[in-house]
Structure formats: structure tokens, C-alpha cells
Length: 557
Image 1 (cartoon, helix red, strand yellow):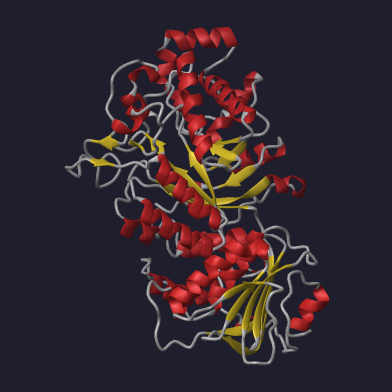
Image 2 (cartoon, rainbow, N blue to C red):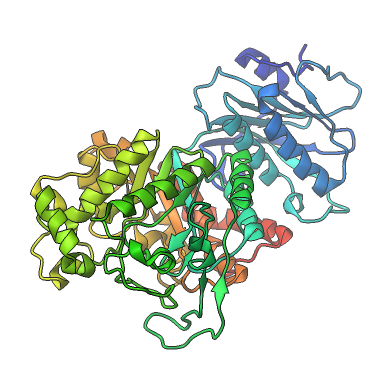
């Protein structure tokens, strides 16, 4: 009986499956796993993957088993047959085995897992597919770095050290944002990124698909969005306010079929894709496609420079709401996750204040100023999304605070939209990126869920002098002054790869890695167990994994 891997196992049977190796929690012996597991003990001996290895899996984990065997086969060239648990008995005939088993005896949640490795076998136990998947990602990091290579390795000793891991994430929202509105990267780059997010146990891919400089998602009801809005005549280079240009057009977009493939690829790796469709600002590409969407009604081009553009959607026109609802309907059909991100940041108010229609709207709805106009618009969109069973998310300008001084520029006296009595819809997720942490604390106290992405700590487009690796590692999503009773509203964090100055995959990877590893550990690992020097030592092994996979990175320690 002690040699069997069965369909469902109890804690007692699991203990019998594992040999009685001595385990130690000595930090110096901990393998180079990123993010660092909640609990890890090292043992003696090692598991060796060879031509006789068999993978046994619970039928609930069939997808996770398929991904694992595919990776192991490609790296090793071994046959690695995979069979359902209960249909194979492991005897003393020399077979070694990797087991993916269903187990509810351990309160680890949907993303938690247990992993036990001995010289005889590997057992991953989980109560849900996500946990089983994360167990496989930890297992891969125990093998030599070549296990993640693009080609079959030869002459590699495919061993994994004996360990016992009990693991679960600190936060439920662990995100990476890719901005493709500014520079289109394409499917293969996105898939490479998703593989890295999965390895690092990040579970949200925020996809910034529309902005002033490009519209990257096919909307069949409005073909001009991609026929016109996906292409700009030139591109600013050399930095903010620079007159230099690339001297060539830039364009690209994803068809709905391509998006469906990427969403499915991510879902198989337990990553939810959250689309970001910017509104009511950062709308130049859409307005260039359909000028009647703009507050001024003027014809404009897709922006070739970067920064805060003036054109905004005309939030006083019913046809604009019809347009946005039709767009969002197609977006929701493509992205099955609960959350839709609407941006909402850096809205310039000049056109609204100059518009008779917007002034009429303000009078009719008793709106005291442009910040309340934006809040009125945001809540209408929130109500629409809620009616479709979705939840709205937006950058923290949606709360009505004047983060950029735009109200002062236009002669307004308004400080916060809520001062006029109108509040942000209760179910909205506030994506905090700018301003005093007191703003995030206030939002949490008022009952809003918060994702903390403070720009000075999490923006991957910032250079390594602005956000060095140790600063990225030290980031804590929970504001220091937030009372414990409100901390559950901080549901996680994100790191952001804004694309203004990221024209190539090489530059994208250079800016992303190795800081992605630091953010992954900040989002997953218990705060008490984190140590930068320990992380930096483990990162040296991770760099070898990137070398094997052909991933570029910033090499300095």
C-alpha cells in the first residue's frame, strides 16, 4: 500500500507515500525557488528523472499534468507516460513517479499546494487545479535550469533535491501589466511573458490595449478602430518632450481570434487576463477613428508623441455611451474574468469645460465641477459592467482627487469629487498608482478593494537607478498606516511595463527582468520570511533559467 498513488489521498496515506527522510529548515540549504515558499524544509538525497519515470495525476488535474509532461519531455527527451491516479500500481520494479494528487486535508486554499520530494518519488498535493499548477512550477525550479530550455538538453543530470514544501500566496492579486498601445509587441512576446508570469506564480496579466497612440483590439462593430486607430504615422523617440522621431509608421492589433488564443494560453497557466480599455481620457486613437466621439468634435490623428493628451470622450453625448457599451460588450465576450479595467487616469478637463453640452450635463445632474463629471461617467460605466456580472477597476483618479493639478490649471477649486456628495460606485476596485498613501488608506477605509501599484516603487519602465532591485524587493502593498481591520481590502499588487520607450522585445525583457522576480516574491511570500540577500543569491540560479530559455535581463547584482 505504501507504494501506491491513489485518486484521493488522506494526510495519513500521504505520509506513507513519503520515505522518512530527515528534513531541515536551515535557510542555507534552501533551494533557489522564486518566489520563496511559505514553508520549506530540505532533506537528504534527490529524485532522479529518467527514462522510467511515470507521471500519475488526478483527473481533476489533467491540464496541469499535460503542461508538466510537455515541458519535461521537451527538456529531457524522456517518454514520461502520464496515467490517471488509481490505474497504476507502483511496485519495487524500479519505476519512479511524479504524483499530482487531490487533497483537501490541508487548508491551503485554491492556490496552495504541498510538495514532497524524496529519492523515490515526487508528490504534489492540492485542493484545486491552480494549487497543483503552482506545485509543478516549484518542482521545475528544483531541476537543473536546462529544464526550462528551448531545446532538449544532453548530458544533464536531471535531479531534484529532497524537500518538503507547504505553500500558499500572501495576496490573491499578483499582476503584471503590459502596455501594447504605445508599442505593439505581438503574440509570441506575450506568450513568452505569460510563461514567466506562470513560473513566478503571478496570476493576473493586465493588458493595456488602447490609448492615445494606438488601438490594439479588434472590435467588429467599429472596424475603423483598427483600420485607423491601430496605426500612427511616426513615433517620438529620445524621451519626454523630445522632438526626435523614429521616421517610420508604427502599427499592429490583435484579431479576436488571436486574443482568444492568448486568453486560453493564459488560462491554462492560471493567469486571468484583465483588459484595460481607456476612458474617458487617453482616447485619441478612438477619436481619430470616429471624430464624433470627441468632446470637441474635431478631427485628430493618432498621437505620435507621448504624454497627457487633451482629447477626451464626450461624456454628455448618449451616442458615446452606446459606443462604449458596444465596445465593452465585445471585450467581455473575449475576456471571461470578473474584472474590466477602464483606466480613468490623467483626464484633461479643458474640452469638457469649453463644451456647452458638458456644461448642460453638469447643470442637469448637479455636478459641481469636472472631477464630478468624471465620477458621473465612471459610475455609469460601472453600472453597465455590473449589469453584465462584471466588476470595474480603474486608476485612483476615479476617486476624484486632483492628482495632477488639472483642476487648478482650468481655474477650478475642486479638490475631490466626493466633496460634492457623489461617491465612486461601491464595488469598484481602486488601482492605486499616484499620490499620498493616505489616498489609498482612505479608499480602503471606505470599503473599496485596493491593488497597490505605487509608481515610484513598481513601474518597470523606470530605470534601475530610479527603482533598483532592492527597492523593488522591499515594496509592501499594505500602506504602513492602514489599520489591520482594513488591510483585507488590499487584495494585492501589480508591476507595470509601460511601453512609451519600449520599442522591442529585448528592451522589454531588460526592463522587466530581474525585477519581476522581486515583485513576485513581494506578492506571494510571507513578509516575515523575506530577506534580500537570500533572494539575491537565489536569483543567480534564476538567471541561469533565463539563459536556458533565451530570456534577456539586466545582469547587474
